[in-house]
Image (cartoon, rainbow, N blue to C red; front, side, top):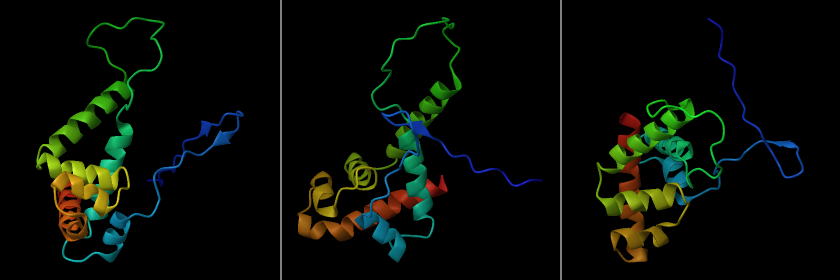
Length: 149
């Protein structure tokens, strides 16, 4: 059995040159928590965070931006991309439904948007100075459960 090839996706920039799209890789407090591990971050927490990032990336964010010209498909026929987007949305909805909405919003803000613990504290309604330990527990728990599902 041969080793699978690593596939790289490219996009064209404004001048028509090929460019590699970049994922969010800025260093955040969540990255530090994952690196340090500890009782609130099991080893699989990174896998859970990566899974959520893939699900967020698979979802359409603004909906369809262009008109659909061409062949009309019958109601039940959906493209592969539409099925992937629908599956990602369903999986995220199911995963987020397992947690209090304030906890999920804080997780989303810190992991997807890279917000600090002080900013994300507004969702769990604790003073910014006391938020770090609570948010570390929330993010660690959600990430670990996401990895195990």
